[in-house]
Image (cartoon, rainbow, N blue to C red; front, side, top):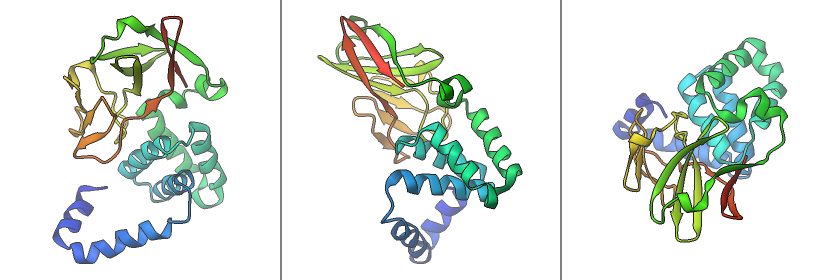
Length: 208
């Protein structure tokens, strides 16, 4: 949401509240993926870069795959036109989201070797990179949680230096996350993207 909308929501909550209530109710019968894809399309149509970055991240968190997002834009070609689709793809490429890389789109999902499971210390957070993708790994006894290192807000790649204890702070807009749960605990309302993982023969594996 833009700074201007945030301001108006605080300054005139009685007026803007109806608008946001309408938007929420209008999508109440849609599943989260469909709702997110429609939101992406509306941002492409309006050519709102900040909104596209925000809703693209939300669509990915809601389970939309990069290929589904691209297909949604292409299906909306009669309304969007080629110029707006190219505009959106330029922004997606600038965001450097690993799942949108051509090789990732054409290759099926697979298990990636992350590290020796013993390398992740109990109660601590480790940042690593696998196949060009940044990951944060949190271990609690025999349970491992693996998160994408990109902030769900605008896909900023969060570095190791942004980690203090179990709190991860995005350097771009200050969103803070509890790495133990992945929840956003300050400023934002979207969690880190969790990646499926498992331990096999002493190796921690992650799937994407």
